[in-house]
Image (spheres, rainbow, N blue to C red):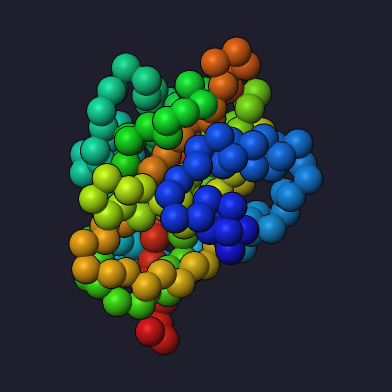
Length: 198
Ligand SMILES: [Ca+2]
């Protein structure tokens, strides 16, 4: 994911990010983040509570920060191991990147090796699941999955972050950026697991 940091630099440049997502949607850089391997026993170490958007068979966004619930749909459609429900987001304005739905990840300063995986599928233009580092008013995308497949697919990556005092980390789900093109992206089983070795 160094390419993201190099392109975005110190502050988030959303127009370039969207250009990158569009390139991913065209299939030019797909394949680097798709991983069909099973998750193993990572669910109990997941830093994200309510990663499957449901509780006792009912859909919920509990534990997620949501600014506008009207832009989110619960759909009774889930990937393997994803229970009954997933969330669907629609393509929206290209910039600025929305603030939600977001999950604040409780991590102390220091080095963290993180495995970040989701299940996703999209129609039209691809949405994305992003790791966003926030410090004050500055937001920086440090890693993301562009959801390019039209059927449920697991996307996984590993990233090493060195968190400074004042940094906070968020997982942000995004339905894609376009005011003229239709797009919808579904998400489920959002997992962030700290790896050994730090
Ligand atoms: Ca689910």
